[in-house]
Length: 108
Image (cartoon, rainbow, N blue to C red):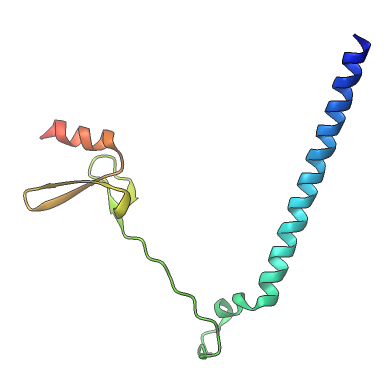
């Protein structure tokens, strides 16, 4: 019984030590990532004042646009490519979930 208790204590101490090391490692990795981003100059594009113009030498970032549509039942917004769609009366109706789609069909 004493052996089992000792093994449990050793296991607990090991897991606690491992958790502490993981947290410290995550914090240090996060700091290094932030520092490398600062040093790479990618943030300088966002620091342009109203008087300055972006030059061709500045790195260009392309924006990804996602078209959002409103669910006709619950009012949530969902990405158009993820929405359930019903075409009726020459009009598209968008839904965030199968349940909202079924509610709409039950109303008709």
